[in-house]
Image (cartoon, rainbow, N blue to C red):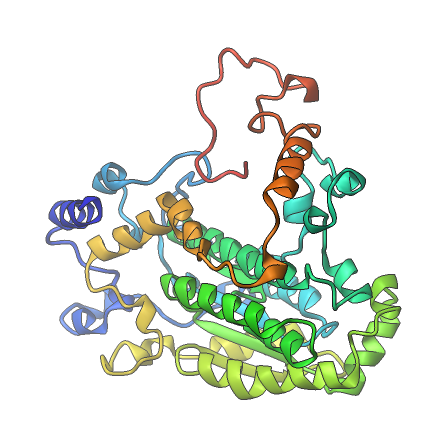
Length: 408
């Protein structure tokens, strides 16, 4: 009932308002050319300088955006040709980080790095919760990418991959918050849409049970449809032998010593990427694939991006590409913004899938009690961030609230 009321109210206050012209071709046809939004992404070189925001960014990290805010702050007014979601994909050690950073800088977009379990294990005060492992039962101890590389058949491997998907999902919502509230485009290193590639590879190599795979797929089915697919996916391709050479060359200890990155593992990952993920995402997003064996030039990729005519998909209402991003009314843009900026906790609750038939994903009540007592008595964990006097926080009696989209 609350959702119905919200939708009706937002549409009422936005009656008569339409989406930005470049986002709805049916309406641009009736408007003068001067009002049509340019849909081609442009780099810093083509623009001749940095991006100039059309409107001041909305402080979404410290101020909520609800139905009431939608009365006064519309969404599409901040969008320009670079208000897009770009995901950079590729095998391990393909150079995604360097390329994604350079691409974000050239396009004046916000860069989101690859997630890892440090986001869970290092709290807001910088304390590494992995130090608590000796005090915890085995089922509650930390297990991150380093542990996976050294012991991929551990019972916690399934929980590790589900957490990785959860972190990618959470980061993608953060990216949507940013684009809806500021108009600035985003570049992400991997995304929740490609996460299943890792899960399926782990399953094929015998690191995950059939039950754990079933739980993962159920969680994914329950959550992925809530997001908006990216506008553009860039895949940096490397053959398996080149990936293995790069893993050795970058000399990360747990990667070099690992038995995980075998030819069979990397081959399965390549097949899943190319035969499933890329084929599927190409039905919605633009797809660029580059042979990155000898690296490549970011400037060349930017030139290719600038040639993509995103406006072509607006002219055909039956074309499924970019369909997630077609909102005919301003009220619908506001509803989507409320969903990602104000209702993220509700979206994250969709991960609560009641499955009790997979032993490696369960822990006993006694273990959970020990974990809770130890975890929430660690430095900086007794109270919410900003309210821990033992960590140097001050002014506790005068604080009234915490930023709605800031980490807790």
